[in-house]
Image (cartoon, rainbow, N blue to C red; front, top):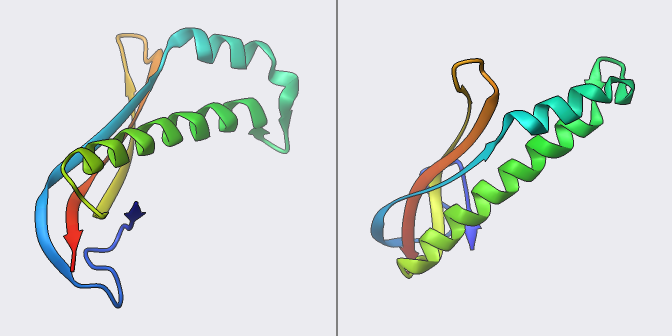
Length: 106
């Protein structure tokens, strides 16, 4: 499955637009608590554990997006937008959301 943040794929013809597809992943408060309990992992102002969890959430959201596109019969997803949002009354959750347009290539 080809994915791109651009509205077109260079050298490829978009034959059909199949609709908007999304993928989401939410990391709960316990993940943050576990990560911040091990602050010794921070090197140079960066937390390897935190970055690993964000990467994992992004990969889950991307997999969901691709699965949704496949379900529509798409060959690619264009115009992808990636967002991170803090959720919950105490900002204890993080949501990674990815959206784009599923397309059929010619």
